[in-house]
Length: 205
Image 1: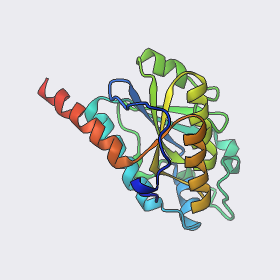
Image 2: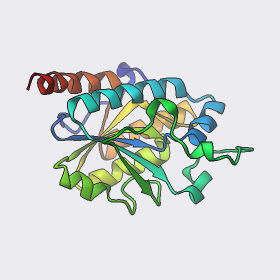
Image 3: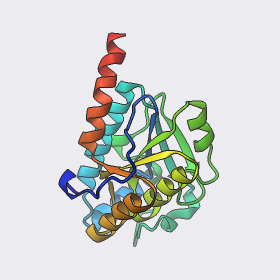
């Protein structure tokens, strides 16, 4: 996983705000997690960091929204799955990041979480114009979701150490591309630090 010192420079000037943000978690179903784990991706860190993000978001009152692909798309997510078992368990979420009551789960028809879903309207209803993006796969779903968010006048923040790809090079490319074109790249620690004061304020109220 990239360290904060390895992140591309921010050119957006945006400031993440828990009152404006929603956390969007992409494609963390067991079949995709298993496939990337077999390829040597840093899945343990991905799940640990995403779990931290989800906990901090819930405590701060930041909406948590999960996006999953329709079942028939399978390998079109660009997760190679040779010999993957055809069991129903693959459709379940990885245990560490299972949705909880209050979370939303949307089914996307394309790589982007905005593709033929209610994500944009849901964000508007919640008065959220920033999206914090975590999950799989960095060069596919993460990039396209960030680009779609930017195209709809939202501010995407990709969490560098809470996304993964098939290779370190692919992971790095995705982060550089987002930073160059449509969004900000941040770290789990940075997001959690911003969300935690908001959680303390909410508890005091």
